Image (cartoon, rainbow, N blue to C red; front, side):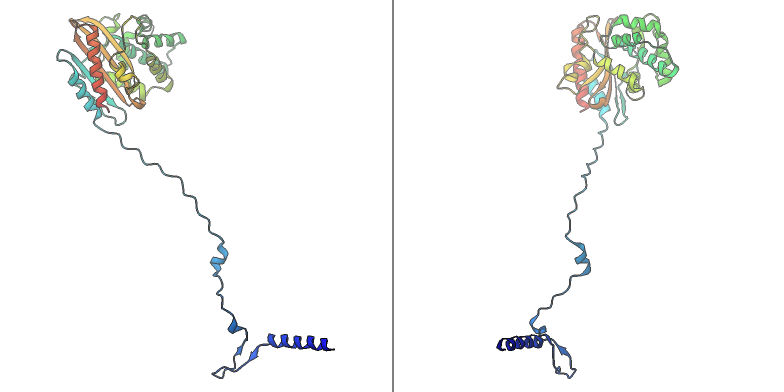
Length: 319
């Protein structure tokens, strides 16, 4: 009985605590007050947006935008021509022209439009004409003919050039190429059998190289460049052709690099003809033509050394 009374008293007390106490507010409004209100600290609800958003994730940064490459320097072609002419001896008749493929600038020296005997540079004229005609007119060119091209351009094999000259109307190549490329001073030899006496100015030589690098089909350009890049130090006739643009200071490991066709010939009016023409630098940016007529007296080695100095000065001015 005593236990039942204690349970009843406990239940009654719990019921009493759960029932709100009715009191009259001081202003007589009779508001209902909960006995628990005074004991609780009010908690503001989360804003709907904050509650729904969940934890914030850090966004990964986007890919870095590389800076724009600097604009190529201008005026280098003109500076190179000036440097070449300054390096030439007074008795040397130097014709120089330089083309900057990055800026489109072409600079021509004081003798740059004067025709010079080509010597072996005529091989480039004949071969470019032959390959252009194959591409444009369907001229038949065999694998054996292409092997002659490599021999004529690399070791500068004169016998290979003789065959190309005969098979592909070499005497007419200067006129055809002049018409297609707008050459102004290139002409065939007076004696059609003497291909080394074809005439070409430095300015036209630069234009022909520009055509090779920028206008010919890829396969033709690669044939020409690879054949000239494979040129041995000693040519087929025993001549040392590692001079000018192919001198170690230009084409060697410490230089900017070059691919070139050389020319040498003796002897008109007591002069040597010694030429170096080609593409220089990264991505073959610069086309350079250096044509010289020098007195025979000092000899070939002196002529080579002078052209080395001219080519080095030219390339240094190109940066």
